[in-house]
Image 1 (spheres, rainbow, N blue to C red):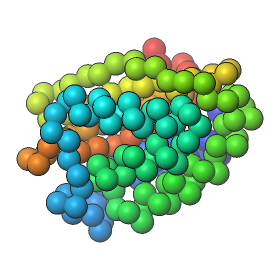
Image 2 (image 1 turned 90 degrees about the vertical axis):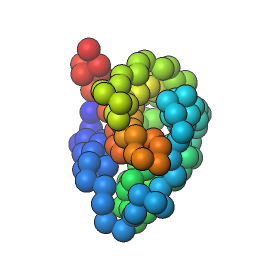
Image 3 (image 1 turned 60 degrees about the vertical axis):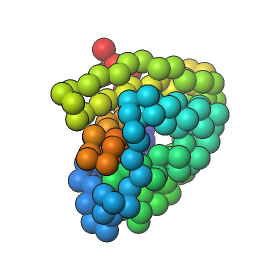
Length: 149
């Protein structure tokens, strides 16, 4: 992993870990059930796997409990990393659902694998079931393949 990819991943984790600031939960769209959550992550991964990282991030934006200004910063940082990842891993060639885990009635984690010509990146989405429905609380992607096991 390059230093710049590490920095982006760290920024994504920090950004989504403490979602507060200028976003109220009432402004965040929610999903009615786990099927809709799975469909959202599939739509995100379809865009990402097609080489449209920004498009994938934009799909998740209405559902994430992160202030818009912080989310825009994440998109700007991610766009800078696409050429670095492409040089290192090759083109994005697809994606694969890995697993879904639920903790109690309120937490849901979905893991998807983005496939490149020479590597894979693990995308993890953490959802919280609010009184209004499921919202995306945190997401991250990492390319340290050793952590997949």
